[in-house]
Image (cartoon, rainbow, N blue to C red; front, side, top):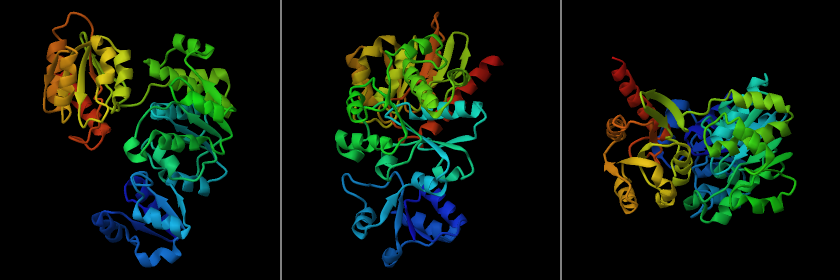
Length: 420
């Protein structure tokens, strides 16, 4: 019998998948309300201690504590009982073993690279779909596609047996999620599991950590900004921003390793328009362009946007992470003015004040946007109103998508008002 641990989206997708195949399972979540809803609304069996003798496999959701600071009580007992522990991505491959699989991990750029690889495959007529950490649970994808492109987080990699990937992509590595992994060594160990049992390995080597991994995985195809291919993509930069150069280079090598010809890959990359909430162009009025980079939930991600644009009226704030924005100071000269909102605004204001960056404080995003727009329209030169929060969204929004949609909605109000 399967035990599904965690009843967020991936857990519910796993339950629906197993139920649809008549496979025996039970569900459990630390929230009694979620367990009650699963039983009452879905008719699922809720796990009890008496079920342990029947449990052979635990399907664990990414958000369940797995090792640090301590494993969830069910994970701990599952290990003692000798139960198999897997994720929904593992089950997808188990039930569709003959399909092709491409896995993508890295600290930054996973979603764009996953979407880019999928886009190029689809442009060639290949039946490819993407899922995993990118937002669509693996088991919602169905079993009848030819190629599955899976974005794999450190949590998914840590919580699963090794994937048998046709192509494994490791973009980059920097400090992240240490509050869940406990130490950088543990984070690295989780990430590099993507290469175990992979037929082809693609490794970006432009950060301080990944070059050392090449010693361990010497057969990996390495990708660097300094390669001759980088010059080619710089002259055909279909996606704006230096960070997207790495995304394109790695996607190119992955698709070539998968078997596509050079011209086909380049043509596919050329037609890719990028992902929503990732330096997304929303619109322009006169000299002012609006950019939605709500996905930038850390200072490192925001740095990519600050490098990309000029004449920036910067919207930032939310639930801040431990690193703050001090690391962004080399880019502060590009900031015309900053507009701070949400829980982090006072902390960020201190940093900006020390660097003599003009700023204004607001409670909410839409107020900050209005303030930025009023100031930007006074500029005689080109201006960019950039939402790149360097923060999680959870103080005011359920996720970065909702925050980005809110920004898009209010930009629409501004643009429509000026058309009247």
